[in-house]
Amino acid sequence: MSELMEQVLELSVSPLIPSLPDDVTLDIVARVPRSHYPTLSLVSKKFRKLIASPKLYKRRSQLGITQHRLYAVLRNRNTGDFSLHILHRKLNGSNRMVLVRSLPLMSSRGSYAPVGSKVYVFNDLDALSIDCTSHTVQPISDIPQRMSFKVVNVVDEKKVYVIGDSFCHVVEENGGWWKGWRKAVTVFDTETQSWEPKLVKQDMAVGLGPFWSDSVVMEGKIYLKGCSKRNSFVYGPEEREWELMEEVMNSKEWEGACVVDNVLYYHDCSKKVLRAYDPKLGYWRVVNGLEEFLVAETAQSKWCDAVNYGENKLALFFPKKHNGNKVICCAEIALERRQGGEIWGKLESCDVVVEDGLFDVVKFVAVSV
Image (tube, rainbow, N blue to C red; front, side, top):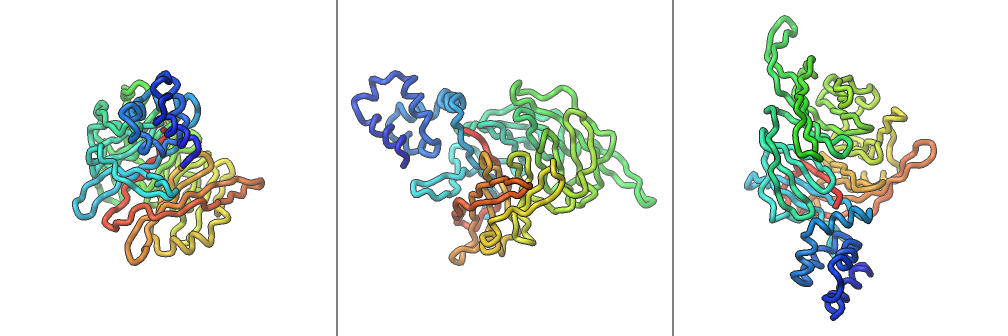
């Protein structure tokens, strides 16, 4: 337990705490690490109410001490239910995934976009926001155009771009005709909590297949990796234009990727290495310092997901067998960029976070609270 947390608990049981003004108590608690809040909420009703208050998280933001929290949408193989779990740090310092019981089940067709301390969820037509400070749900206005095979990405930390198949058209190919779909782009402004009035209908059919295996945002542009190389594109929100993905970036089958400081990272399951792509340099690098760990721990993993976990840090999730059981692990990795473009990784921890092999990972999202 941190020294600050111990001081707060001492204050909470002393005669002094009732005499402290509420704003002083708020200021003290705002400085306590967010991971201690569940314990602190057990002290009294006053503390429980304070920790649920939006004022506390506003003060944390003003102080610049927000923390990254990771959530995962998991599917229960037995029931088919989709539920939200949070990566929780236990008192012994290890991590585990814990079900957020106050939230309803998620839709099997949902797409997820983290913005600040909220997660926006876009289903076929309806949409909602999850406040991660209080774990409550609020509906938002419906998507103005029904879309299938949606991908969602956040640009400038305030606008959510929803891209999907929306307009049917006829395609002639190899002497035959078939029905295809044109892409549409619509934008949700999280500041005004409204959809932009103009739906962008593309003049071109973007690829012959509807699926993208992954998408990320770097330097204000949306990179969409196709299941085949010919279907990989870059969308520029300002220009509202598509262009083919740069050949070198498209040369790797990146999936389960994340962006940290405008560099894309993903785990190459075939080579058991963590790769990095800097669009300014225009080439791929292997992250040094993790080779032995990745070979030993991810040798049997068919998938690995990298998630931004704060400044110069990522979390790598992967499945493995542990004591004869199928589990999901989480490795926290610190990143260091050196002169000459080299990137080094340092393993900070690796924990089994899901012990029950009945769960499949659907999506990871990171928020700041």
